[in-house]
Image (cartoon, rainbow, N blue to C red):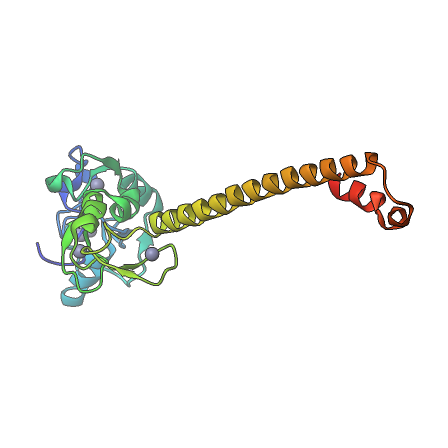
Length: 228
Ligand SMILES: [Zn+2]
Ligand SMILES: [Zn+2]
Ligand SMILES: [Zn+2]
Ligand SMILES: [Zn+2]
Ligand SMILES: [Zn+2]
């Protein structure tokens, strides 16, 4: 039947539902079951549609008095707890769950069909295959997450590697600094050798007899400090 208001298709249930759960108008399992004045129960939408054409019960033909329906809460709960199969069974989903959980499952079912979210891509894939599709999707675009401002696409994402570039730049810089440090070390050791040499020369001079007038200009104190 093609009515959108019909009850639940019998095919979705794991086990054949009891006969007293079926609507005698649409022959499906009752969706939102209501009881009319003669105590017969139908899908709410099925009986409303029926009563537009005739004012008699489709089961017992008695006249329906008023439109005061009783919503069958207990029956509704019972129907909601029936085990159903996933609507994506054909594409491979083996899941069974209570009817009440149908929508929840459909939103996350790995076998549900979803559209690729990349702008311009028309591809429809199973939810579980979406990330795989994204790897090969020609519409994939993303700004480099390192913040370099490069728009990455399938053609340049593999060779683009900001981190690698940064690492290489850092290594070059480090190498330069190390060379500089080595140079400074050589310089400083050369200088201390020269200082030692100078100190040695001065000490030899000091031990030699000197003329009186040279004594005050001999800055022993200062030389001692430089050598330290
Ligand atoms: Zn119905
Ligand atoms: Zn009736
Ligand atoms: Zn499923
Ligand atoms: Zn795509
Ligand atoms: Zn980048």
